[in-house]
Image 1 (cartoon, rainbow, N blue to C red):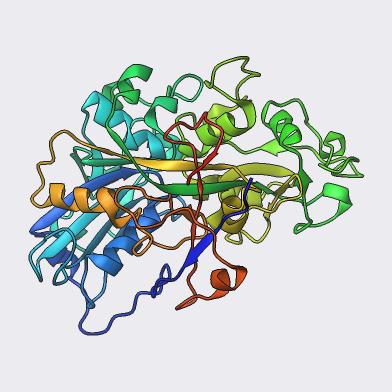
Image 2: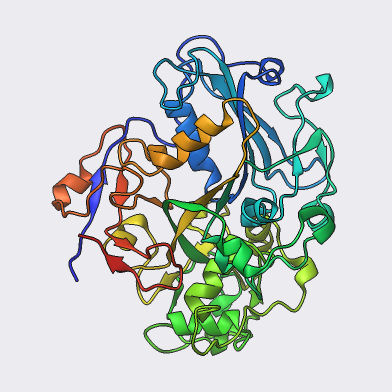
Length: 447
């Protein structure tokens, strides 16, 4: 197998947007946007959408971010809206200067990127029509663990159809045991595996995932220790076959810990795209043949409904292990990202074929998009903006798929010097391997 990688530079890094002129639209102006779209789904993909909008749809006045975490819970910012004045010549053909608003609800993750579209149910989004809600941080009240499965959020919320859904894996993977069975059928509806698989999906980009361990207590020591697991060892942890780190073998042999330290598996809820990807990668769940089992989950009521939730829980629990996209590395000082068979997860390791825990995020477009300008924005996002090398938003977990949706990233090798030659400190990696729309597939190299 050839060791291929491509690096390309873009001039704006994630979060490095500068305000060159006046400020972006006020929340009150955003409430009267002339073009808008309602997006829901993957929290891992959310920053990529924000960057794409800021770089290529909004003008240099900047992006106004309206963010509403649960007031009585942790500040995950799971209800957001991105607003700006449309730039001249934008790819979505929105009129220059038009106030443009894109809602992105990450609350519920991949569940809300597929299930409401298949069941044709409306769900909660930010409500900017109320004067008291026309602020940068409108009040949304509730806790995911209490109201996440019933959509019982109150405050600055209103119901609306999902017009563009985003999932970490293709919707057909959300079958038992990864079906969102805890979610209220009255509110979110229900769908068969066939109905979910039938949703028209478009691949966007790849996302790289990893295991995060709180090493406090391991080897009698503190956090920050290097952890190296084999895929088999990790699978047995997820199955509950190992309950103490002293019993877990490293990829090189021997035990992870010389002292006793209990393992606490911190799970996302069933229906999470990250959890589904972990169960497919380590356990082969719903991929045909012998299925060794499902991720052990003795206390589903304690599952996290957002990446920030599971990371925060794991960071305060000695011996904890959880799973998340690798851009979360470093967000919690007490967590160490584990190596798999000696390979530390990274975009470069994924593009070289050395690390293959990555999946292809997909977008599901509603049959009817009623919001003015929404159809044009959705088409622009899915037909090239998020998949083309020149415009792909940089993030530590995002890889471009060659020749996708009109993209200009062929799978050809470049020299090591080229991979380190970047502009603005941003490197975009193109993965010459693909799963061709099926998470169960072995990665295949593209020509």
